[in-house]
Amino acid sequence: MTYSIRDNMGETLDEPDETRIREILAELSNADEEHPDVSLKHESGWALSVFPDKFVRWENAEPDQPKPVDAMLSSWEDIVGLLLMTARGEIKEVTSALSGPSGRPSPTPC
Image 1: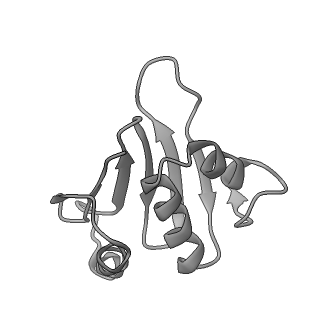
Image 2: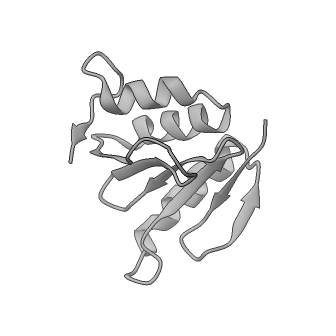
């Protein structure tokens, strides 16, 4: 399974490892209005976008897909975990973690 990540300056990197994903997240401290987020997209079409305030959006832009799920997460470690799950193609697990009451991490729905 393949995935790519778009950094907050719009550069796309194919299949970065966990260390590089963490570095890209750290770059969010320099985010501005033009470049507010980073996004990891799996080949299935599902993507997790991350903003500097730990707001995340889980969505699939393909036709006839569920509505996006928005949440505020409490830690960067939770966000890294969700990004790695997305990279591995664990779509149901990410969806459950962000929308189910028993899921981890425990987000605050927006």
